[in-house]
Amino acid sequence: MLRESKADRTLRGNLLLASSTAVVSGITNVAGVVAFLAFTSNITGHVANLARHMVEQNFGEIIIFAIWLAMFFSGAFLATYIVRSYESKSYYKAHSIPIIIETVILLFVAIYGHNFYKETQTEREVVIAAILFAMGLQNSLVSTISGGLIKSSHLTGLFTDLGGDIADWMHAKKNVTEATRHKVYIRTTVLGFYFFGCLAGGYLFDLYDFAIFYFIPAILLTILYYDLSPLALHKVLRLFSRNKASKTS
Image (tube, rainbow, N blue to C red):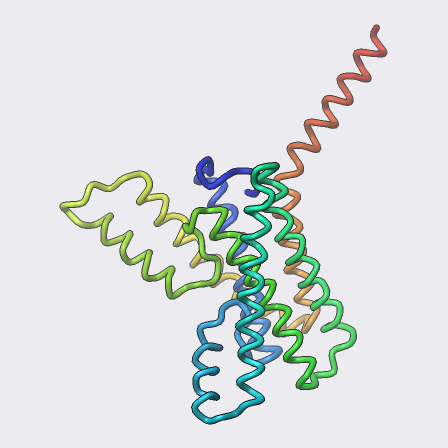
């Protein structure tokens, strides 16, 4: 999922990346709504709220929403900057570092929320800012890796692109290419797994409260492990074969 460049990506790799990150976005967004009454995987609603508070001259709220937007932007900026800095050395390193940062942030949210969160306004605002930064990281990373094909939580753009792709697929004058079919598969995968993540997030939050945030880093660690496991297995097998050869000699 993380070792390939956008030019070399396979349909299978894109589907795995799309499904796993969409589940993360769905769980995070629903958990944010239930726990903080705020969307935490996208900023569309926050932009509207910022405009409303500017009209009403609620300066405290203006500052908070501006900070939240800046945190999402900063996460997106950092992810792309890291990818551009390391992609010439290793695609896996370039793509995994933002995932590691996101994992650390969401693990902090899980530990703090489960053990120390007192539901104060300041805590709520800080935790939302941290989650938005993490989601900015993920959205930018996934979009950069896939060449803009995968957007793990931007469902407005997803429905727009999906509607256009299906129109191309069904139109009598349009020759359906393999690329068009792949786009439809990937976008419907994002939609389906995001919805599944939302359902799972709502159900699990009722059962486990803030402990649900432990599930999210676990999914991200699985993404990291998926690309490392073949390399680790290869090294173990090579070491085993060397030891066997040395014993026989």
